[in-house]
Image (cartoon, rainbow, N blue to C red; front, side, top):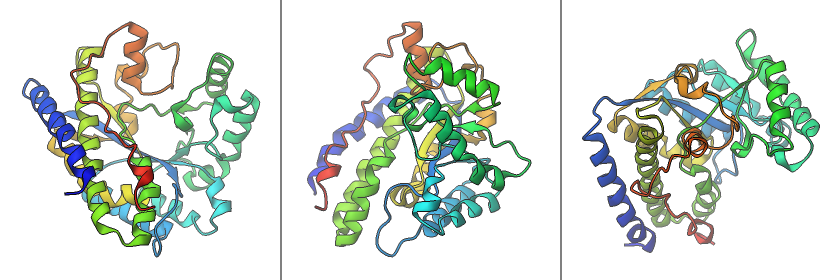
Length: 309
């Protein structure tokens, strides 16, 4: 057994026990909207794999699990860096799924001026608007889930309101992005043993994130809110997506659209830090609620950088 598998097994068991204890008390299931960041090109792809391949596998998994209205959030800079990648966006639209704005270059709002962020947001609009036609495309997913520090937050909220943008919030994520480059390296080396170990570690992260989010929702709201999952359009996430969606279904997930999920009052409740970080953690912090330590922790992903070197 490889070290990564042995390292993960204890955490996986803790996640399973914690989630089982929670679901024993709440058998009604939960709603979750799937949203995907970094279209059309997240990270690198393995040799012989194209952006079209990634998009095809993604869409096949989503359709097989009858996932409705999956927003893909676009960094349009990829259309210049990788000519031809726009076909992945066209495939997304042909599948009936909407596109939203993730800024042109995946800019962190705190990295420069408010004006620079607004300009980057606007630069990304044509590629989305042209493909969305008459449908509503003014939906923003903040890069890095950073909605602005004290010097930026009020200004960007005013801008978004004036330009009729909505924010796509997030309540569940599991660091899927961290596996992208490692997978490319391992595929290039043909190291299937390490890839199999990565799959186990990845899925323990998925299950731990479900357990944490369901428990945190109950503590922060006294009920189960409708959730929004953030994942990225990377090659490894595409590979794992069928198993991810199955895991959510096995824990009681009902797939809904982003609009359906965000019709939950939790998403429109007043917040001094609207759009920042994960919704439930933000709410708990603002309300002074201790989410506790009984839920499984984040899976340690520090090993990934050293694999397949």
